[in-house]
Amino acid sequence: MNQSCFAFKGKNNISSYFIYKLLSNNSGYLKKIANGATFGSITIKTFEQMQIEMPSMVLIFEMIKTLSQKNLLLQQTRDLLQPRLISGKLSVEHLAKQAEEGLSMAAEPPMNYLRSAKTIGVPVSDNLRKK
Image 1 (cartoon, helix red, strand yellow):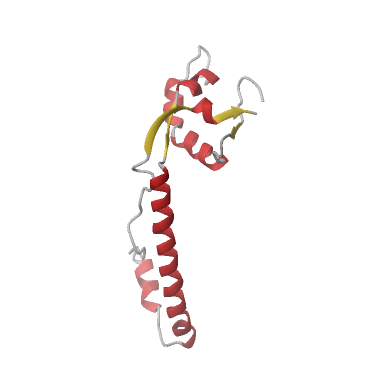
Image 2 (tube, helix red, strand yellow):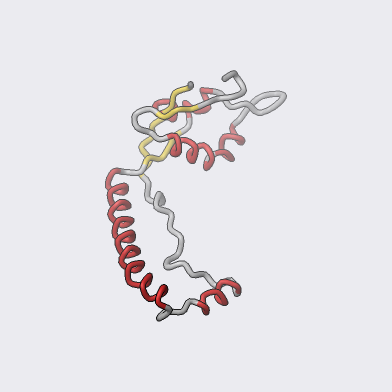
């Protein structure tokens, strides 16, 4: 890599996907604070000053519990509906019409699971290292 291109790898069990999402979600902020005469540049110092949000362990375990319960419910629903669908006792033709009309078939509204993430004030550079 060079002065214009960075590659990041997580340390301390920080996943590459988390780093990708962190940087993607903060791209507007990074562009805003980029400096340089010819073109905006982002330096290591930029990342050292950036604060990140890390979800608390309680939040993570609550998410795991909730998603596990939802997964179990989905498995039970599948096991109940699949034989009925295969035998023809249950019809889903009306659902195709709803989908064409643009009606949502989602069981619940979308959720932002990281909404209550705890800001721990750790500079990005402590959790990332340059390749």
